[in-house]
Length: 579
Image 1 (cartoon, rainbow, N blue to C red):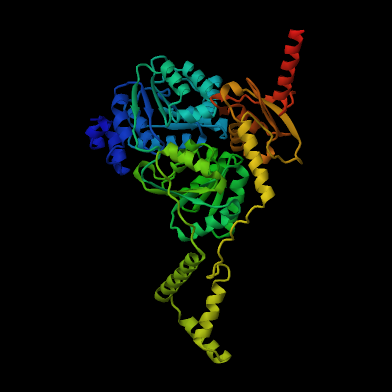
Image 2 (cartoon, one colour):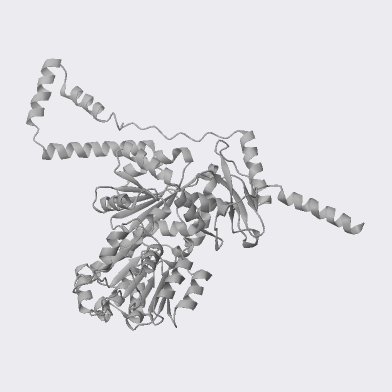
């Protein structure tokens, strides 16, 4: 029997009375499995290694016991939580503030890039007990001596695997070196790759290890489905589904920053309250967008994976994967934005015909099938629009004062010598001009010609024969320059993984990535000239196959014929030895 089986409610946990009062006011009754397993050992001062998927309530799992152990007399920070993104740091800080609402003189401070350093310096002078920050900004304050960890009692790594993927591991280890050796450490991660376990062995002392076991890798309260649709019909399919599906708040995931703006703009043109959320927006704009979604002023956010990390908005009832993720774990993180902490949610995945392999990979990872659904037909959409129109008529007749309009229709009848039925038909026609009741079926995709199919088949077989080299289709109108990446054949890197990492993290279309040459211990890739500094610095910290790319300009030239030249040199060398 596990701790979660024994614990019935929060009152059976030895939490501080003020915390119990606060969480009861928030409607918390029964702890989630990760909370029931993690709170007792953390209350006792043990180090903890916790593995749980996103949306399982792990913020409360570490915040409640650590807040219970605060020393009200201590002026310096006692708890430091490191988070991979600004959004997650703000979310965790808000949670701490809510849980500690009944604690006297409590102050939590989020530290993240994009906010005024001067404002943060002034807030640090208020002696916050809890700091929640991204590694980079925490390091800035430690180097400035505006933040000290000498009195730190507890250090938390939240979503450690995301910090690994974003290249923060060296920064985290440096921060650990600034903290007292006797500090308590809690590490939480959705997955446990070897790099995370190495950190745990080095930084945690005899940790209690907890793993919340799920039958699947995704939350069971999420109703998942997929829809096969061609690239050209995605927007039509999306707007049809949005029209017939009842939803509260929604996140739509796309691959690139450009796509966030394009998709949000098209949705707005169709009458939906939608906005983009991407890395090009400054922090003030991002916070304003999330605030509007929470307040119900927005219904839909179109986001990239990076921009949506750490986003937790209760009213998100639906997640749509407009672009299928290349990494199955990204799918799990995406749909975790809904169905959180026991709430129900829906997740829809758009799959292009050639992406069925990615769908199978996601199903293997989640260990459950993702059933297919059919798009609403033209008849379905027509009936839905007519039903809505009839409902509006019924509501208007019962709730509005229509005396003036009765007189107006009667006047038109007499003056135009027409019947009320003719007038009603004409008004109905006018009312539906922007959204016609009669809907056309989606066009079927044009069948590709024999030559085009043969060309694609040849490309596919070439890729299969030479997985380490590729010269994919690119935009020849764009000037390129060559970059070196510190990942190669010995790391078993593939062109698909390199293209996927660069395209997703830099917001580039695949055609904007030139030739790739994967060599023994490094790779060369052509990227557009004039890469922005922030994207360059971000790509340097991206990981592929567990290797940091450490991207930098190179004078080498990528070649797809390097292997054949090597073979030629080998033959010459053998001939020389024989002679």
